[in-house]
Amino acid sequence: MEPNLLAVDRLAVDYKKPGLRSRTHRVIHDVSFTVARGETLALVGESGSGKSTIGKAILGLVPCAAGSVQYQGQELGGLGRKARRALAGQLQVIFQNPYGSLNPALTIGQILSEPLTASGNFTRQSAGARIAELLERVNMPSDTVTRFPGNFSGGQRQRIAIARALALDPALVICDEPTSALDVSTQASVLELLAEIQDRTGVSYLFITHDLAVVREFAHRAIVLEQGTIVEEGPSRALCDAPQHVYTQKLVAAAPVPDPRIQRQRREQRHQSRQLVTSAAPARP
Ligand SMILES: Nc1ncnc2c1ncn2[C@@H]1O[C@H](COP(=O)(O)OP(=O)(O)OP(=O)(O)O)[C@@H](O)[C@H]1O
Image 1 (cartoon, rainbow, N blue to C red):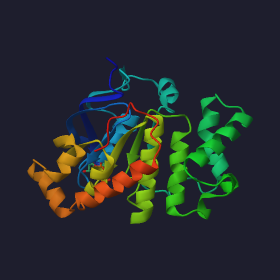
Image 2 (image 1 turned 120 degrees about the vertical axis):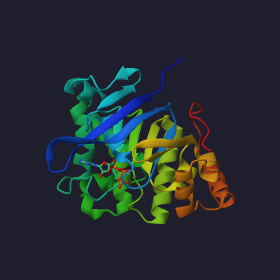
Image 3 (image 1 turned 90 degrees about the vertical axis):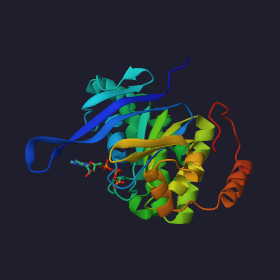
């Protein structure tokens, strides 16, 4: 049987205590989960519950104090810088802030060519063709390449950030609150784009969010984090509609998920307008 794309096992992360150089405090406790190919797993929890820290630990941006992170059966913790770099195209991230994540001094063409050039697998010409393809995939016009991030709205910048994340055909994208800085209708169109890309390519998403309505609509499964510990996990729809743990119940009560019938209608409309090519992905709820 094919191993999970990502397997996080008993992960713990410590941070240094402010002002105390040698003292640390544990913010992630014994966290285990897997992500399958073509799956969207949501990491949900209040601010400070540890969602971003888990994403950073997977990306190797903070050290693991205990446990393991395996990508396609390979332990990421033991990898040197060179091996990590080789994996960089496979494991990508989209950040919350589309204003801060794109270098304002570079044209979009330069921003998108960076990962292609760094991979060593593209000539100038093939990089140009790939950039045109990426922009088309995120519904941006081809003249985008000569313009600067400052010329675009938040939603358009997030589309460009998605194009950059997709440059090297990643298998897993960590989406860290990718829509929370956007207005509701822009948010919906970016989520739709991400879903469409997943249907077409089979990419997996680890989707970090505090928004349960987005979880219910977009994720296949969800994990709920409270103070760095998993308190509940399950299929996203069941988790949002019938939360079992008191903490999840509080999250749902604080941010009621919209009427499931309206969501279902929207989902059906979206499915009808989409061409499903990949059949390997698990069914979205
Ligand atoms: N660099 C750091 N040094 C020390 N403590 C940190 C650091 N980064 C985060 N923390 C602490 O770790 C805990 C988890 O933070 P994290 O940013 O992972 O939470 P989060 O759930 O992603 O929050 P948010 O939704 O606000 O982004 C919090 O208590 C936070 O204060």
